[in-house]
Amino acid sequence: MTGYQTIISAGELAPNLNDPDWAVLDCRFSLQDPREGWESYLEAHVPGALYAHLDEDLSGKIIPGQTGRHPLPAREAIAETFSSWGIDEKVQVVAYDDRGGGIAARLWWMLRWMGHEKAAVLNGGWSHWIDQEYPVDETVETRLRREFQPHPKPELAVGVNFVEEIRLDDEFLLLDARDAERYRGEDEPIDPIAGHIPGAISAPYIDNLTDEGLFRPLEELRERFDRLLEGRSAEKSVFYCGSGVTSTHNILAMVHAGFEMPLLYPGSWSEWITDSTRPIE
Image 1: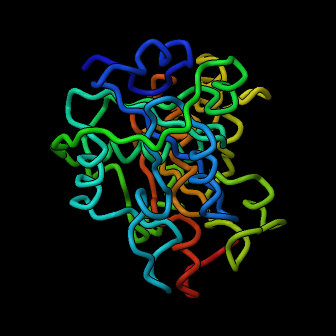
Image 2: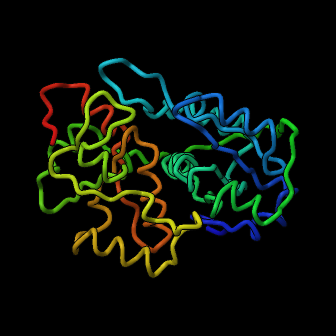
Protein backbone atom coordinates (compact mmCIF):
# COMPACT_ATOMS: atom_id res chain seq x y z
CA MET A 1 0.00 0.00 0.00
CA THR A 2 1.48 3.28 -1.09
CA GLY A 3 0.51 6.80 -0.16
CA TYR A 4 0.29 8.64 3.13
CA GLN A 5 -1.29 6.57 5.88
CA THR A 6 -0.96 8.64 9.07
CA ILE A 7 0.42 12.20 8.96
CA ILE A 8 1.13 14.52 6.04
CA SER A 9 2.85 17.90 6.08
CA ALA A 10 1.58 21.06 4.41
CA GLY A 11 4.57 20.93 2.09
CA GLU A 12 3.67 17.40 1.01
CA LEU A 13 0.01 18.24 0.43
CA ALA A 14 0.44 21.51 -1.47
CA PRO A 15 1.84 20.07 -4.75
CA ASN A 16 -1.08 17.62 -4.99
CA LEU A 17 -4.06 19.96 -4.60
CA ASN A 18 -5.02 19.64 -8.27
CA ASP A 19 -4.64 15.87 -8.45
CA PRO A 20 -8.09 14.26 -8.93
CA ASP A 21 -6.83 11.20 -7.05
CA TRP A 22 -6.43 13.32 -3.92
CA ALA A 23 -9.41 14.32 -1.76
CA VAL A 24 -9.04 16.94 0.98
CA LEU A 25 -11.65 17.10 3.75
CA ASP A 26 -12.11 20.07 6.07
CA CYS A 27 -13.26 18.73 9.46
CA ARG A 28 -13.34 21.95 11.47
CA PHE A 29 -16.06 21.76 14.12
CA SER A 30 -17.07 23.31 17.43
CA LEU A 31 -19.12 21.41 20.02
CA GLN A 32 -20.37 24.75 21.31
CA ASP A 33 -21.60 25.90 17.88
CA PRO A 34 -22.14 23.12 15.31
CA ARG A 35 -22.39 25.68 12.49
CA GLU A 36 -19.05 27.31 13.22
CA GLY A 37 -16.95 24.88 11.20
CA TRP A 38 -19.12 25.23 8.09
CA GLU A 39 -19.07 29.01 8.39
CA SER A 40 -15.28 28.95 8.73
CA TYR A 41 -15.10 26.74 5.64
CA LEU A 42 -17.16 29.29 3.68
CA GLU A 43 -14.75 32.05 4.70
CA ALA A 44 -11.67 30.15 3.54
CA HIS A 45 -10.34 26.61 3.21
CA VAL A 46 -7.61 24.57 1.58
CA PRO A 47 -8.24 24.75 -2.20
CA GLY A 48 -10.33 21.82 -3.38
CA ALA A 49 -11.38 20.77 0.12
CA LEU A 50 -14.87 19.46 0.80
CA TYR A 51 -16.50 20.02 4.18
CA ALA A 52 -17.08 17.05 6.52
CA HIS A 53 -19.52 17.82 9.34
CA LEU A 54 -18.91 15.86 12.53
CA ASP A 55 -22.60 15.60 13.49
CA GLU A 56 -24.07 15.14 10.02
CA ASP A 57 -21.40 13.21 8.10
CA LEU A 58 -19.20 11.44 10.63
CA SER A 59 -21.82 10.39 13.19
CA GLY A 60 -24.96 8.30 13.24
CA LYS A 61 -28.30 8.89 14.92
CA ILE A 62 -28.22 9.56 18.65
CA ILE A 63 -30.58 7.33 20.63
CA PRO A 64 -31.22 9.09 23.98
CA GLY A 65 -30.34 6.91 26.94
CA GLN A 66 -28.50 4.38 24.77
CA THR A 67 -25.80 5.94 22.61
CA GLY A 68 -23.08 8.48 23.22
CA ARG A 69 -23.03 11.93 21.63
CA HIS A 70 -21.34 10.84 18.39
CA PRO A 71 -22.23 7.22 17.60
CA LEU A 72 -20.70 5.72 14.49
CA PRO A 73 -22.88 5.77 11.37
CA ALA A 74 -24.03 2.53 9.80
CA ARG A 75 -21.33 1.21 7.50
CA GLU A 76 -23.68 1.48 4.50
CA ALA A 77 -24.27 5.16 5.25
CA ILE A 78 -20.61 6.06 5.58
CA ALA A 79 -19.76 4.13 2.40
CA GLU A 80 -22.34 6.25 0.57
CA THR A 81 -20.87 9.43 2.08
CA PHE A 82 -17.37 8.45 0.97
CA SER A 83 -18.70 7.69 -2.51
CA SER A 84 -20.37 11.09 -2.69
CA TRP A 85 -17.03 12.67 -1.74
CA GLY A 86 -15.38 10.98 -4.71
CA ILE A 87 -13.34 8.48 -2.71
CA ASP A 88 -12.41 5.10 -4.15
CA GLU A 89 -9.44 2.79 -3.66
CA LYS A 90 -7.18 5.05 -5.76
CA VAL A 91 -7.79 8.21 -3.73
CA GLN A 92 -5.41 9.67 -1.18
CA VAL A 93 -7.53 11.31 1.51
CA VAL A 94 -6.20 14.18 3.62
CA ALA A 95 -8.24 15.49 6.57
CA TYR A 96 -7.60 18.62 8.59
CA ASP A 97 -9.19 20.73 11.32
CA ASP A 98 -8.29 23.52 13.73
CA ARG A 99 -8.16 21.30 16.84
CA GLY A 100 -4.71 19.76 16.44
CA GLY A 101 -6.22 16.92 14.42
CA GLY A 102 -8.68 15.88 17.13
CA ILE A 103 -11.65 15.94 14.75
CA ALA A 104 -9.79 15.05 11.53
CA ALA A 105 -8.53 11.88 13.22
CA ARG A 106 -12.14 10.68 13.48
CA LEU A 107 -12.42 10.70 9.68
CA TRP A 108 -9.00 9.04 9.39
CA TRP A 109 -10.10 6.30 11.80
CA MET A 110 -13.43 5.76 10.01
CA LEU A 111 -11.62 5.27 6.72
CA ARG A 112 -9.36 2.68 8.41
CA TRP A 113 -12.45 1.06 9.96
CA MET A 114 -13.87 0.77 6.43
CA GLY A 115 -10.63 -0.65 5.03
CA HIS A 116 -9.18 2.43 3.31
CA GLU A 117 -5.58 3.03 4.40
CA LYS A 118 -4.60 5.84 2.01
CA ALA A 119 -5.68 8.48 4.50
CA ALA A 120 -3.69 11.01 6.50
CA VAL A 121 -4.20 13.98 8.83
CA LEU A 122 -2.61 17.31 7.95
CA ASN A 123 0.09 18.04 10.53
CA GLY A 124 -0.62 21.36 12.20
CA GLY A 125 -4.01 21.62 10.52
CA TRP A 126 -5.58 24.83 9.29
CA SER A 127 -3.56 27.20 11.48
CA HIS A 128 -0.23 25.81 10.28
CA TRP A 129 -1.41 25.90 6.66
CA ILE A 130 -2.23 29.59 7.09
CA ASP A 131 0.98 30.35 9.00
CA GLN A 132 3.03 28.84 6.18
CA GLU A 133 1.14 31.04 3.70
CA TYR A 134 -0.17 28.25 1.52
CA PRO A 135 -3.09 29.13 -0.79
CA VAL A 136 -6.71 29.25 0.37
CA ASP A 137 -10.04 29.39 -1.46
CA GLU A 138 -13.64 30.38 -0.74
CA THR A 139 -15.35 28.20 -3.34
CA VAL A 140 -17.83 25.57 -2.12
CA GLU A 141 -16.16 22.57 -3.67
CA THR A 142 -17.56 19.44 -5.31
CA ARG A 143 -15.97 16.23 -6.54
CA LEU A 144 -17.18 13.72 -9.08
CA ARG A 145 -18.74 10.70 -7.44
CA ARG A 146 -16.68 7.52 -7.21
CA GLU A 147 -17.79 4.19 -5.83
CA PHE A 148 -16.26 3.46 -2.45
CA GLN A 149 -15.80 -0.27 -1.93
CA PRO A 150 -15.79 -0.99 1.80
CA HIS A 151 -13.60 -3.66 3.33
CA PRO A 152 -14.85 -3.33 6.91
CA LYS A 153 -12.71 -4.02 9.93
CA PRO A 154 -15.38 -4.20 12.65
CA GLU A 155 -12.86 -5.62 15.10
CA LEU A 156 -11.28 -2.16 15.47
CA ALA A 157 -14.29 -0.94 17.47
CA VAL A 158 -15.46 -2.43 20.77
CA GLY A 159 -18.72 -2.05 22.64
CA VAL A 160 -19.63 -1.20 26.18
CA ASN A 161 -19.84 -4.86 27.29
CA PHE A 162 -16.29 -5.48 26.10
CA VAL A 163 -15.08 -2.46 28.06
CA GLU A 164 -16.86 -3.72 31.17
CA GLU A 165 -15.16 -7.11 30.79
CA ILE A 166 -11.60 -5.81 30.33
CA ARG A 167 -11.43 -2.58 32.33
CA LEU A 168 -9.88 -4.31 35.36
CA ASP A 169 -8.03 -7.00 33.36
CA ASP A 170 -4.25 -6.48 33.62
CA GLU A 171 -3.81 -7.96 30.15
CA PHE A 172 -5.68 -5.00 28.66
CA LEU A 173 -5.29 -1.26 29.07
CA LEU A 174 -8.16 1.24 29.01
CA LEU A 175 -7.06 4.80 28.24
CA ASP A 176 -9.02 8.06 28.58
CA ALA A 177 -8.05 10.64 25.93
CA ARG A 178 -9.82 13.63 27.55
CA ASP A 179 -8.05 16.39 29.43
CA ALA A 180 -6.70 15.27 32.79
CA GLU A 181 -9.15 17.56 34.62
CA ARG A 182 -12.10 15.82 32.99
CA TYR A 183 -10.60 12.41 33.74
CA ARG A 184 -10.30 13.36 37.41
CA GLY A 185 -13.85 14.71 37.46
CA GLU A 186 -12.70 18.21 38.39
CA ASP A 187 -14.16 19.79 35.27
CA GLU A 188 -16.92 18.50 32.99
CA PRO A 189 -18.06 21.12 30.48
CA ILE A 190 -20.03 18.79 28.20
CA ASP A 191 -21.47 15.64 29.78
CA PRO A 192 -23.96 15.59 32.68
CA ILE A 193 -21.79 13.36 34.90
CA ALA A 194 -18.10 13.88 35.70
CA GLY A 195 -15.43 11.26 36.28
CA HIS A 196 -13.99 8.33 34.36
CA ILE A 197 -14.48 4.61 33.81
CA PRO A 198 -12.91 2.74 36.74
CA GLY A 199 -9.71 1.01 35.65
CA ALA A 200 -8.91 3.58 32.97
CA ILE A 201 -5.72 5.62 32.99
CA SER A 202 -5.38 9.20 31.81
CA ALA A 203 -3.81 9.73 28.36
CA PRO A 204 -4.84 13.18 27.06
CA TYR A 205 -4.65 13.32 23.29
CA ILE A 206 -3.27 16.84 23.47
CA ASP A 207 -0.01 15.38 24.80
CA ASN A 208 0.70 14.07 21.29
CA LEU A 209 1.30 17.66 20.16
CA THR A 210 4.00 20.26 20.62
CA ASP A 211 3.23 23.77 21.83
CA GLU A 212 3.03 24.77 18.15
CA GLY A 213 0.26 22.24 17.50
CA LEU A 214 2.38 19.82 15.48
CA PHE A 215 2.73 16.12 16.22
CA ARG A 216 5.70 15.38 18.42
CA PRO A 217 8.71 13.67 16.83
CA LEU A 218 8.35 9.94 16.33
CA GLU A 219 10.78 9.04 19.11
CA GLU A 220 8.85 11.14 21.64
CA LEU A 221 5.58 9.50 20.59
CA ARG A 222 7.11 6.04 20.90
CA GLU A 223 8.39 6.84 24.37
CA ARG A 224 5.01 8.20 25.40
CA PHE A 225 3.07 5.11 24.36
CA ASP A 226 5.71 2.66 25.57
CA ARG A 227 5.39 4.30 28.96
CA LEU A 228 1.58 4.11 28.90
CA LEU A 229 1.45 0.51 27.65
CA GLU A 230 3.90 -0.80 30.25
CA GLY A 231 4.72 -3.85 28.16
CA ARG A 232 1.22 -4.58 26.88
CA SER A 233 0.58 -4.95 23.16
CA ALA A 234 -1.03 -2.04 21.34
CA GLU A 235 -3.80 -4.35 20.12
CA LYS A 236 -4.91 -4.81 23.72
CA SER A 237 -5.20 -1.11 24.43
CA VAL A 238 -8.64 0.50 24.25
CA PHE A 239 -9.10 4.24 23.87
CA TYR A 240 -12.13 6.32 24.74
CA CYS A 241 -12.91 10.00 25.27
CA GLY A 242 -16.12 11.97 25.66
CA SER A 243 -17.87 10.73 22.53
CA GLY A 244 -15.41 8.63 20.52
CA VAL A 245 -13.88 11.49 18.52
CA THR A 246 -10.62 12.82 20.00
CA SER A 247 -9.65 9.34 21.25
CA THR A 248 -8.88 8.53 17.61
CA HIS A 249 -6.06 11.08 17.81
CA ASN A 250 -4.18 8.76 20.17
CA ILE A 251 -4.80 5.85 17.81
CA LEU A 252 -3.46 7.90 14.90
CA ALA A 253 -0.39 8.93 16.90
CA MET A 254 0.32 5.34 17.93
CA VAL A 255 0.08 4.00 14.40
CA HIS A 256 2.22 6.90 13.17
CA ALA A 257 4.83 5.94 15.79
CA GLY A 258 4.95 2.37 14.49
CA PHE A 259 2.57 0.55 16.86
CA GLU A 260 -0.13 -1.84 15.73
CA MET A 261 -3.70 -0.51 15.57
CA PRO A 262 -5.23 -0.12 19.04
CA LEU A 263 -8.96 -0.51 19.74
CA LEU A 264 -11.58 2.24 19.99
CA TYR A 265 -14.59 2.34 22.28
CA PRO A 266 -16.72 4.68 20.11
CA GLY A 267 -19.51 5.14 22.65
CA SER A 268 -17.00 6.48 25.17
CA TRP A 269 -17.88 8.33 28.38
CA SER A 270 -21.13 9.81 27.04
CA GLU A 271 -22.46 6.29 26.37
CA TRP A 272 -21.03 4.75 29.54
CA ILE A 273 -22.98 7.15 31.75
CA THR A 274 -26.36 6.44 30.10
CA ASP A 275 -26.75 3.45 32.44
CA SER A 276 -26.73 4.38 36.13
CA THR A 277 -25.69 0.83 37.10
CA ARG A 278 -22.30 1.24 35.44
CA PRO A 279 -19.59 2.28 37.90
CA ILE A 280 -17.86 5.62 37.71
CA GLU A 281 -14.83 6.98 39.49
